Length: 99
Image (cartoon, rainbow, N blue to C red; front, side, top):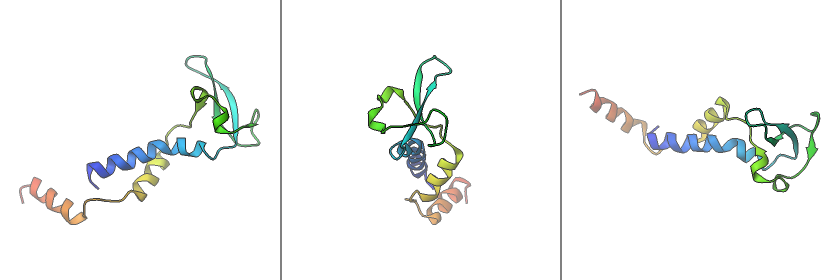
């Protein structure tokens, strides 16, 4: 995997929590920990304080996506297309080792 391939995969991983918000039906109001601002966080229907509301009904500055997870990165790396063949990577590694 090239540096460019890795960059594309990690960018995809970073957007996974945001993509999930498009399909979320329930949000709950959460008081911010660092600045005291409240925000809406995706939640399950059965959670206390869950409200059925569409993402587009929430002001963008109040939406808080979940944190990026290692699972997001692994998933993105697994589905990222490779633009450099393994044979080429081996050739570059051998060249850098002086072989």
